[in-house]
Image (cartoon, rainbow, N blue to C red):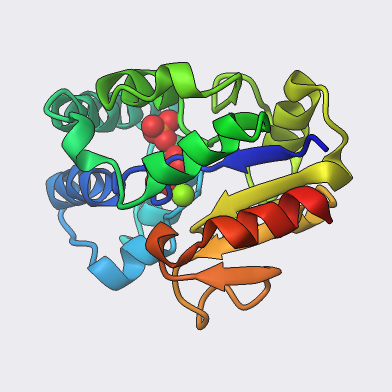
Length: 217
Ligand code: BG6
Ligand code: MG
């Protein structure tokens, strides 16, 4: 019995939301306004382009196409300076335990992330070798909640979507997994991820017996 287990990256494997936030906040400050942590919730799982559009909306700003590109590049440079400091210590609790268990059970393991920096981050935290397939912001044209990134991950694993299970922390990501016809597992709070098939606060709450159930269903 082989299932495909697809992991989102930011907020599931590592907590990079804090770095995205710092970088977006700095950019907003340059433009003369601020963004709050509550607003940052709405940026989780959202593509880089869409994030900047949303932020500009909050600040009531419009930018020329050229300036938009410039700010996107600037944000990413700033973000990369944070990522540069990352190491294995940033892997969220019990993620390696689950990855190792899935490997032991010879399951398909893929990444399904909106980030164009996904490979860099996996390398920084030394998890790159754990993934058989990587679908990320460089491979897709439609961002979550569109299911494209997860469907691509399933295709790379050569496992049909209905045999795939997605771990997601973002509202848009759970919606995308559901739209792909996959089982969605929300990592976070019941308040925001109520549309997921299962919800856990983090991987420490996920027992290997639950993984067995998913493999055998
Ligand atoms: C998502 C993050 O995984 O990737 C978003 O949750 C981020 O916050 C998006 O904007 C795009 O990431 P990147 O690294 O390509 O700017
Ligand atoms: Mg995420």
